[in-house]
Every structure is written in C-alpha cells, then in structure tokens.
Image: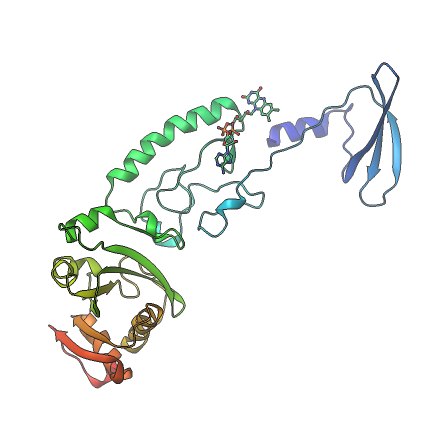
Length: 296
Ligand SMILES: Cc1cc2nc3c(=O)[nH]c(=O)nc-3n(C[C@H](O)[C@H](O)[C@H](O)COP(=O)(O)OP(=O)(O)OC[C@H]3O[C@@H](n4cnc5c(N)ncnc54)[C@H](O)[C@@H]3O)c2cc1C
C-alpha cells in the first residue's frame, strides 16, 4: 500500500486501526446478511464482537516463487523477485530495471518486487521486457546463463567455434572450489590437459588450441581467480593459492594426474602447482614469462 493511502487512513476519524487482530467469527440473520464480526487479539487471545454489516477482506499476495530457491535469483522477504539490483561484479554494466540478480533472467508483473500489482502494470512490463531481452541477447560481452550455480549449460556459440566437426561439445562450467566459484571451459575426451591463461586474458585465449587438443584429450581451461567469470575475492592471489584453486578444480573433476600448460602469469601458477603437487603433474609446459622459487 502506498504511503499516501496509509496517511489518509491514519487521518480519517471514522477509521479505527486495530493491529495484531484477526477475524474470529461472523454472525448474522437467517437471510444471510452480516450483523456482527468477532475479532480476536493475537496478543491476548481476547475476543470482542462489533456490529458490522460489511466486511472486505484483503488477502494480500503470496508469490509462488519457492521453486527459484538455489538458482541465484534474489527474492525479497515476502518472496517477490528483486530486479534492477546487480551484484558487485556487474555494477559497471548497465542492467535492465527488469533483470534479476541472475544475468539474462528477467521478471515482470505481480511476481516482481515493487511492481504495481495491476493488469496495466503487468502488460506494460511484459512489453518493456522484450526490448531488454533483445538487448541482452545481442550483447555478447555479458555473462551467459551458465554463470549460475545449478544452471550449467553448454555455450552453443563456443561449441560451434571450437568444434565445427561436432565431435565433442565444449562447455562453460562453474565449480565451487577453495572457497570461490571458478569458471572453466572443458572439451574433448582423453587424458586431461589443463591450460592456464596469462595476464589480462581468460580461458578464451585457448580456444584455437582447445579445438586442436580436444580430439585426443580432455582439455580444461579455467579462468584464474580474479579473471573472466571466476570469482574475484579481495585476496588469495599468491601463485601458490591460485594453484590450489586449480588443484581443487582438478580434484573435483576426479583427475589424479594432469598435463599442465601455463602462459604468462598462468606459467607462475602452473609452476606453483607443480612445486606443490609434483607427483600429480605428468608434463609441465611453461611459456613466455619468468618464474622464481617464491612462486611456490
Ligand atoms: C481478486 C483480484 C482482483 C483484482 N482486480 C484488479 C482490477 O480490478 N484491476 C487491475 O488492474 N488489477 C486487478 N488485480 C490485479 C491483477 O489481476 C494482476 O496485477 C495481474 O493479473 C498480474 O498479471 P501477471 O501476468 O503479472 O500475473 P498473473 O496474472 O498472476 O499470471 C501469472 C501466471 O503464471 C502462472 N504460474 C505461476 N507459477 C508458475 C510456474 N511455476 N510455472 C508456470 N506458470 C506459473 C499462474 O498460474 C498464472 O497464470 C486483481 C487481482 C486479484 C487477485
């Protein structure tokens, strides 16, 4: 209810507001007209009857959004879907006022938190969201739906690019490892090769190589902590810690030994990996940067 209406009601001399009170019973004549309403205090359970001939019940709204639980869409205390509020990582991006906390997922109408609960409002938002959806789908820089835990799916555009033969699909996935969410590309079948990208790059730098290697290997290319679609926490950026992220990812994929390739700062992480888990690295390729013992 709007503040304006609340103030009008509070100011009206012929309206008595009774808080913590519920309707306990109705009384009337045989011809079914209402004569009395019994009210019960929720605090004392005390009941009192009033001569009332008309009763209007405002039942409120109870959004059926329980099924959204666990998929990352934020709802307010009453269960309505929150839109227009972006997480920290996405603050730089202009987001639609109808977009939920999950990129590419929109909410309109009564189910949206703060919407005008009227037919006209729902229709207007329904029309408006079409433009927002077109904007989202046309903007390839935005993260894909698979950035949501539990909603992992392959990225068809990438699959086509990497594997024109269609032999193996490449998927963009997320893993909860070492206290962060790590995004990684995975393709092919066979002995695992892990590719670690360099500074200002992401897993996507490996796309041409993934296409070649995925015929004979399972290729895993993560976005290092702080890069791409992986979490960017405020700390944990020692090469040893970043190597532990990758190790946890490898373990989560049930591999005991890997071949490891690092480029640029990925080289330093790869070296820290091999230094910490020497018995779990079959081959190590270090490209285009220096490394030192302190990277362990
Ligand atoms: C008693 C009453 C009187 C009203 N009178 C007026 C009025 O006079 N004027 C006015 O402008 N507005 C009125 N409203 C409000 C108006 O009806 C709503 O604002 C409007 O219908 C909202 O439209 P919507 O599409 O957002 O949601 P809805 O019309 O509620 O449509 C949502 C649909 O989604 C379906 N659904 C829910 N969950 C799922 C699921 N998991 N999977 C698939 N489908 C699902 C539901 O079954 C429903 O069909 C009234 C509402 C009520 C309850």
